[in-house]
Image 1: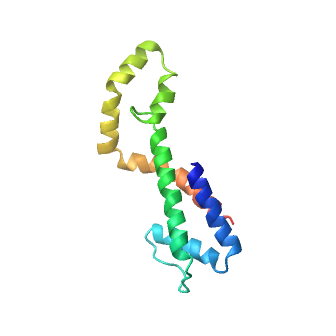
Image 2: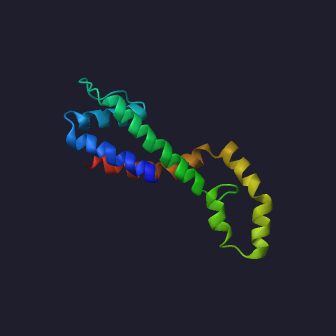
Length: 128
């Protein structure tokens, strides 16, 4: 999340400092979600904005994914300490099945977990 925040900070700096920076960042955001480029006047900042936006997006996805409380992800290490010893043993034994279920059946669930965090970072960018 730190890297994603730095990428957002750099995108905000582009928006505020560079001429045409706001349009470049909005083009990067719209291009990511399949809307194409919004503005016909393409700036040379668009590739940099695309790179920074992808950096933010990927790091948010990785951060949220790792916080899911399914073994062997990092979120499980936090969650398992909240469980009693008996429940923790069961959780450790069957937890890997949760990861398989998450991978095979959880595409929509994963996006539902990740979308609010991505939208938070997008809201920061669009509020400037």
